Length: 240
Image 1 (tube, rainbow, N blue to C red):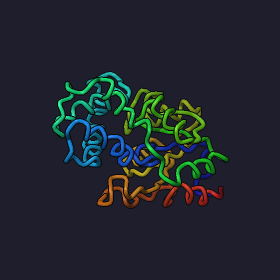
Image 2: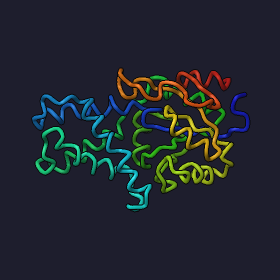
Image 3: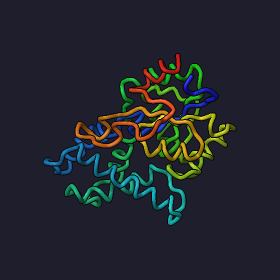
């Protein structure tokens, strides 16, 4: 077995389990039309909002800002990105911005995700190790029947990936050694950070996460413990 000794599979979520770009674009489209941004491309809006994701977390990772849950960062980033599309955030009711911010709670899983996770759950503890906050992960799971055994991630351990604390504190929460846990992710950088902390690693590429012209994370950058085309193949490789 390629993951001998592993007891838990933890998953990156945005991009690995769910298709964030299509989901945000779908919810942004009517919003943009209502507010006169009729020439704006919804996927461009999703991309612009997402580009502020890592810089906002870096304020927390650097210690310049106390730990702040991702829903709050997303909401701040939404107000910051609107002027790029000709929308004055002050002209939009706060309740409408709050509702659009919930787009991140309503993202759709990739077609293989729920079935694959259900098979993997037969042997392993399966849980998110996401930068998303707890209620975001819960709402997403309830809506799409994602069969997590627990909700783990940044808010639980008060650290954003790829900080070592995000991985090591997760192992501590599970009362496991790092090498008893495997991170499953579509992002080589996330896997590299997890490996540096002693976790096992599985790469599942999502070649359209950033659209059809994606150029990143199409192939494994290292000899990860396991590489599979999707969660179904991952389960098959693990004889599930």
